[in-house]
Amino acid sequence: MKIAVADMAAECFPEDVDFAGFDGETAKRIEARVMAQITSGSRHRRYVLGRTVRIVLIAAVLLSLFTLSAYALGLFGFTWRRPEASETVKGTWAEQNAAGEKFDVGMYYPDAGMVIGFDCESAPRKIRFKPHWVPAELMVLDPDIVDEEGWYQKCGHWDDEDILYDISIGYAAPGYQLVVNGQVEVVKEEQWDGLSVRELTAAWDPSGTAGALAKVNYVLLFSEEYGYLLTVSGTAGFETLEHIAKELEIDVTDELYEYDPDFNIGILNLGRG
Image (cartoon, rainbow, N blue to C red):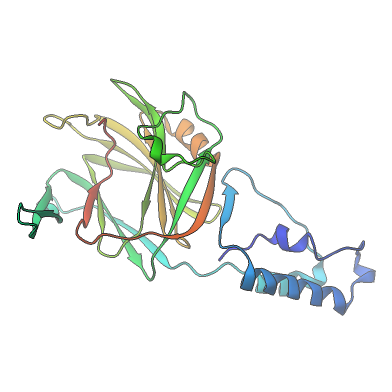
């Protein structure tokens, strides 16, 4: 669980404090405040990626406050690899026949240029988001993916020929793979506000694949703490996609994601339909 230092410190100092006036009672108030947040605070966490809070802490309590409010260790891992030239990446989807009997259907990806996997120690919690900046009209394909408070599960800007941007959510799950088809180039790897960020571009010949786009840029935001994968992708340039991503407000909810192991592979490539 992450706890914002600003939220805890704000109520710890009812009086004006300077170095000469610091005493043991102040430290006790801070410790009590932090422990109360840890044991009884809401498990929701909301933040905007592009906004950071800078806090000057009193030197005498710096070490103890940071120790008490340290971020939890990450429980989720993100891996990616390039398949061997002779490898056909494969997985399964479960189907049912007329009698209700379940059987596995093999899914094969001979054009895979990158395969994403996950390491999991627990079930991730679901998230939702609010875009605070987009370069063109925000659209939804299904009214059920936006709630009455204006939080989204998926949105973007699509037309008959192009997908300028798309914002989608995925989650870490044991044994699950995501495939990126085509010639994949890794552009950047860095950290934003506790998120692992990977940027890549995929050029894929979509011949015979209805709705596929020839070249798409991807900004992948992965939370090692909460286990979600937020993808901002489209034909827009990386500067535009980064701007969208950095202005997203993210809400980590209490609801756990339920992984269906009957579908252990998926495709990340963006397409219409």
